[in-house]
Image 1: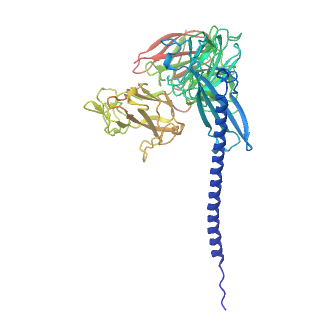
Image 2: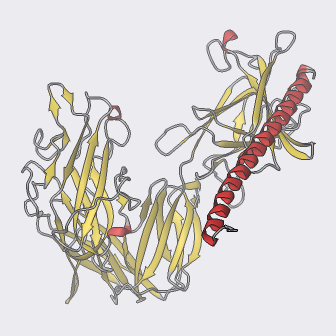
Image 3: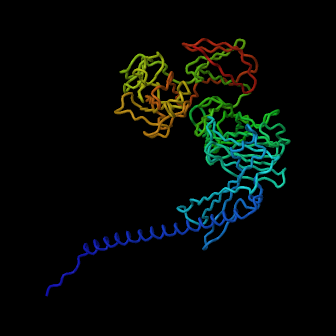
Length: 594
């Protein structure tokens, strides 16, 4: 009698099939349990929110408000409850509403009884649920008085939050406190879609309302009370007068950072260097109180990262006598845009009693100029230095396409037919047929030779502003760089070092992925959202350095104190002459015109 069994391979295959089926069944069961749990939590959240709304509806009208809120009442702005072993948070918001039917406060006619009804919102959130169950339940209701509202001697506080470009910021968190009124005020709320938060029927108070506006990932703006350290604040606490509207505006935007490195001319790190860093924005005057003013020290590797910075112009001053600043990449002070990470190299040399740092820039573009001969003379002594590499730029494309190497500054490599290069010599527009512009167009520059391996710092184009009708990001750029003048292909990349991102803000830091290359091309993208309008480009400039030579800067050390005659010469520019007084660490900026 023959007997047949299973081979090892057959057993392994059977076990694998069973494991796949079992895993699928297990995953399906887990998913069903999760959905059931989510539904259960949602039902509980809805029940709690309904209960809160019913409690509010049964309160006397004058009691409908939050403790330390406006309107003031018996409700807690935030509380917790436990249902079926699950902890829930209940957030209650009550706001007076000024309805248009009888006029508005400060309007025409002026409504002296602006609190027409109350808008109540109950927000319930599970605190002990996993990440998948964190969406709250929101219920709202209107609560109206039984009779007409009585005349009020209170006022109104209207708060507006916008960004650096003047665009309203929705969802900004606004905190309002006032300990000068009884009961005291402590409100935290968010701006609506137009960046507004309106507090109606607000108790009157002279410079009593302390306000802070913030948002995750954004800077913070706030009022400042007078103090011994700041006797004259620029934005004191807000005043609310009887039957009037107080308008207060706050500006916030995405936070930025500066990645600081202290080095020598050979790119060697210099550790533990101390600076006093301050911005240009002030929160108090006479004397000036800077909004940002910090003492920092680079680490053992000569680096320091300044995070959560506001858009501003930042100044770096040494706070010791070990070194002098011989230059910076980019030049100091640093202008920081919202939502950017700026690399900053500060080149240092051993300190001498008297030194002079000269920065030479183009008067129009305000970019550093390379190869400018800077000569300073005092008596029989004369010193000449040439500024480091600065930038290359193109201001005319009317010479046409087909040029591989950037020899003729009026030509370029190619375009797709959507760009007009000669409708106005020196400017680029979208091509026009009749009275309509193309929707988009692209242009690729000739190959620019920087002479040696270089670090590319900033991409700048003019004009900075484009017609709003053309839409957002109507001008975009990408950069391609290579160690060879004729690579197999040019790979164009954006600010993230990726092929699907674009430089959309002028004077933007170029991604360090291109550093060390000698040759570069740029690719321009023009587009419009309205065929009656076209974006315009009149100049494209690339700021760069070779090694660690700061662009457009010449440093003189070991000088004697006193007045020096200075001349600055550069081919194609008018020669500049000035008298500069040297005493200690001296700095001067020269603007040259063509």
